Length: 113
Length: 113
Image (tube, rainbow over all chains, first blue to last red; front, side):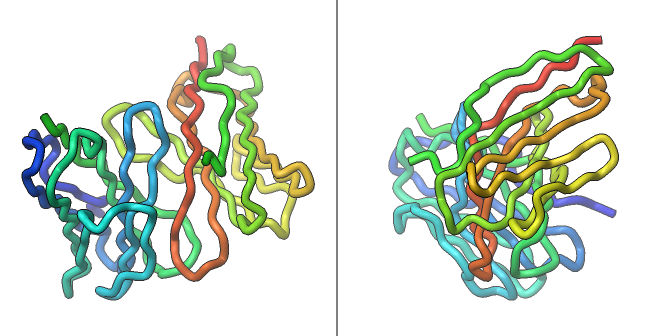
C-alpha cells in the first residue's frame, strides 16, 4: 500500500509570494495533519483536518490556511511568505480523529529567499 | 516555551548495549505520549506510545517508561542495532479530541557496530 505522499519535494519561493503544498493520505485515512519543522527543531503542529473540517489549529498566523477535499487529500497554503517560513512541511494521516499514531509523509522542503 | 524537552541532542551506544533516551514535559494536561524515529530525507515513523494510565509499555526491543510525578519518560532500546541510528522524537498530546501533538527537538542516536 502507498504511504503518505507529498508534492512537491522541494520548492524555492521569494518573500511575499504564495505557496501551495499538497498531501495525499494513506487510503482509508480520514484525518490529515500538517506540521512545520524548522532546522534543529521538532515538528510543530499547524492544522488537523478530519472529514473535510478543521479540527485543530496551532499557533500560526492567518497567513497559513488549509483545506481537505472529498477524497481526503489536503492542501496547505501560505501567503505573504517570510524568510522564517523556510522549513520542512510534513503531512501526517491517520484513520481517526482522536489520539492515535500518525503516519508521516517525507515532507516538502520550502526555501524562501 | 518548550513543553516537551529532550535535553540530550545526541547519544552514542555500542551495538548490543542498551540505549536510553530521555524526555521531560511540563504540561500537566498531556496524557498520551509517543516516540517517533526519523531517518534523513524521510518523515517521522511511529515507534511506540504510552497512555498516562500506564507506567510501562513494551514492543519487542523497545520499552517506554512513564513517571507521571516527575513528568518524565524514557525510551529503552535493547539490544541496540546499527539500524536504530536515527533521530528520536518524544511527543505528547492531551485527550482533546484532536491530534495536536507537541514534539521535542529530538535526540540523535548513533549505534556503533
